[in-house]
Length: 346
Ligand code: TXA
Ligand code: MG
Image: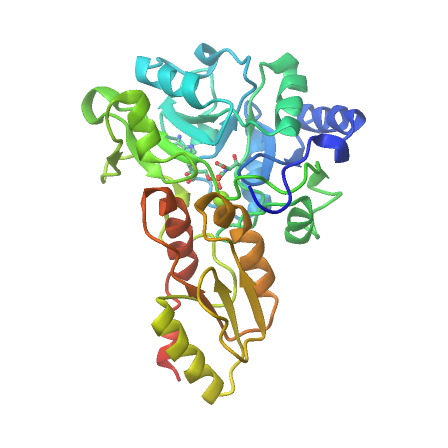
């Protein structure tokens, strides 16, 4: 993978893990690195601590959060009944960027799942996350964590992004940010609903680094598309993961035309490219490697950086098509949601 790799927790020494554990045990919030994006964590079994995640994030309380577990966690503690297919996916992909929605055990507070009778579980592979989860409640606790960003904003892939996002809360509601380097995957986990196996089979709620084809290699079938009865997932809202600057998705031909229009109007534009030649006159340009893993790794940092360029719009060259690009297309589509109207005013 290009760029910085997720480093082992050289930046998060052992005493910081101990400090993070005491903050979690006391009902506080800790931000921590995962291989996908950074999470804003609280003790999943402490209803007040979970409520403070929603408060700090500015997220509606009926939105479920993912519970992060250590590789040694006892799944039967968290899940009412585990379908055999879920065990197969766990064996194939955990620790790693796959979240499974399963029937919630009654002892687990409904607060983590926004009142739904399911629970989203994931076992992250980032060494600092694993160290934290193994140290918390002897490796049998669960850390409820959404991405460590304000509701609807771009997810953080470095500790610095989290510090910027929660500058006002750090040292107060947010006790500590563990630094584990840049998240290797860069976009959020693939989410598969397995809570309705008998009636609906596996259902893809959010595409990510692990593709439907990889899931089919294990289960022998492609997960279905979400239907109206599928569990609600806020990452599936049409506008999500959005910078403040309008994001416009374009073929290279359209990008050229729009750059020309903005130049004529003397409006600053930023560009996110992977193959085409740079348009002249951009106030900021970032070029990502046209490989799905490298592109996803750099995407959110690029959007954050271009968002600070003071541009009227961020022009994005459409990424290549293909199943392994699905996660990237999904996030860009959400980042761009509603932005087309900014051009209508010109
Ligand atoms: O990669 C990730 O998944 C990152 C890292 C921190 O693990 N987390 C993340 O969390 O993206 P968040 O809260 O930003 O998005 C989690 C998604 C949401 O769309 C949420 O609605 C869905 O997971 N989710 C969690 N539990 C669920 C449940 N019981 N039923 C349906 N959706 C659920
Ligand atoms: Mg999120």
